[in-house]
Image (tube, one colour):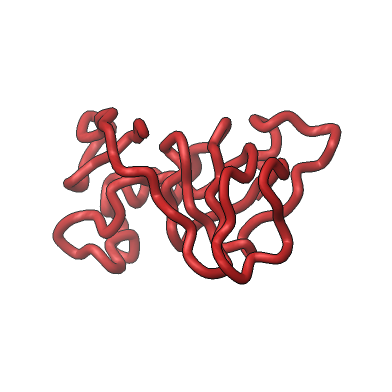
Length: 129
């Protein structure tokens, strides 16, 4: 799958599109096919590595290569123990712990997601968190 990745802190120039392995949901996790994501301050801070708290878990290099926490679209797979969502459910959420929203698919804990309001587009839903 395609994802926007980075391997060092810096300006947006350090970002690039790359093929990465499709993630698999673990216990109590959901694989979301991402249609929309929003860019927020935590994404910018994590990209720049500044202020210093943005480097938690990755002092010299990013802990996770794919940024993006606010996601929206459809459940593509569920891990064992997942009870709130089924394949095809439309969801949105804040996946700050695992990130990965700047990709075609992202794994998120089911507790980080909610069903998308019927009147919302995916782009609108990705801004709700």
